[in-house]
Image: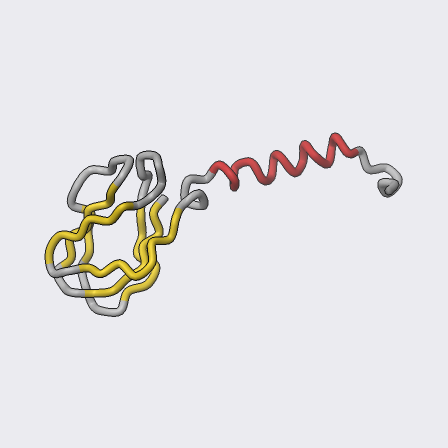
Amino acid sequence: MALPQGLDIQKMQNTWATALDPVIKNQLINGILIKDVNLINGITVINHRLSRQMQGWMIVDINAAATVYRSQPFNDKTLTLTSNAVALCNVWCF
């Protein structure tokens, strides 16, 4: 297949790399969605399955009014959350 006249494949690849590399390297994108986490009124420990130390987390869906916060330092295996209410949620770990 011939390239359109005037297009240099090396230039195109460099342009794509410049645009896409920061997106690919963004830790937020390289995460895992943990579905159906049953939060208790107290401490819930979740295996985040990242095989590396976490950089952050966010609740992306929750079915009850609850205040949820991380109650232990980040590590390479678990996320420890404390909640003031029982709730079912989905957590994005990155």
